[in-house]
Image (cartoon, rainbow, N blue to C red):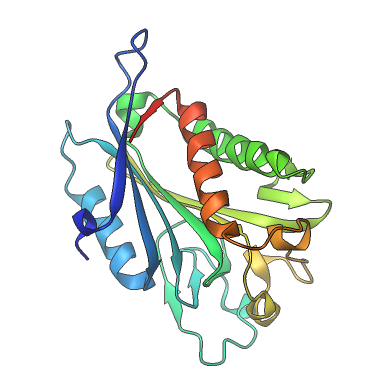
Length: 228
């Protein structure tokens, strides 16, 4: 996968905070899972101290991903959808077209971030994005992610390697939710899963608009200005 072939823009620190590193946001469209996973892992295994941080925004073709400590019993009936064992935390989840995936490749040491700080940034970004759409959501202390009442609308899964974060966030926007019924999402039996399209009237360009909103809110949470 040639990341340079896709639309991207730079976010730079404001003048009063020049210590923030350069950050590149890439919009990658609809992607197979395995090439993206291999690309993220390669960057984590080949750290360059001066490399810009990156955020990747995309959707995946249908796939179940199982976290490194995931239990097989939570995969009930995958059918024809492939199951990929990966190295993030957490249990099994589903990715498919119409879901917004945001991967955060951040040099945690350079930012002096801990995992809890990054989780807070991601969850705050999603809450802000949903609030702009009139959706009241919340987080749960012992169940990372974002919920509308008790139904999950966004899942989190991270890995830190050599001081670099990768994997990240999936936010259900306007997708086929039926594959979630074939697993115990995030390891929870009978967990209801919802999406933004359940709560808003607008459908046209919804994924694009949510992607723009989420990326802008994430940059605000991280302290950046946007330069297209």
